[in-house]
Length: 203
Image (spheres, rainbow, N blue to C red):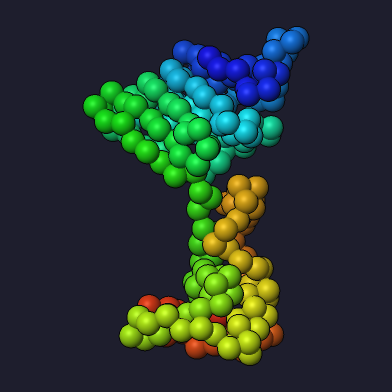
């Protein structure tokens, strides 16, 4: 059991395979149960109160949005029951303890969106964000304005950067049905070694 940092919400774990959020003043449930596949043995709130962490005998720990109850990322997998969970003081790392005789640190960063329709999108996201690219030899090269702007326009046609989504954007992408390849009106820069030229103008 754990209180939110502001003391307004209680988080509980149960043998009924769920964790639940409760109003600390009225004891009324807040949202739907957070479901695991076995008993929930450990719970924690992030320091900012925006995320909750649950550990279960289903051998996973899971992160959830404290407001909506939506999952945040994939389950954190162990080889045994997870019986202890905690956040670091800055909220950027999660620690889990398991019956598999291990404790593990996990970064709280949001995974990049892997756009199967445009494998080149992640690379463009990094290049537009940094203004730099890797050459064929692995050297870092500064982009000119025209090179950067061409990449920016191409990336906009693909839906924008995918390297630093919010949890809400990541969850929406996970639930989005697969669609046909989007037409790109901008001639994108050619891919170098290690990249895929999938972002050229669709015809």
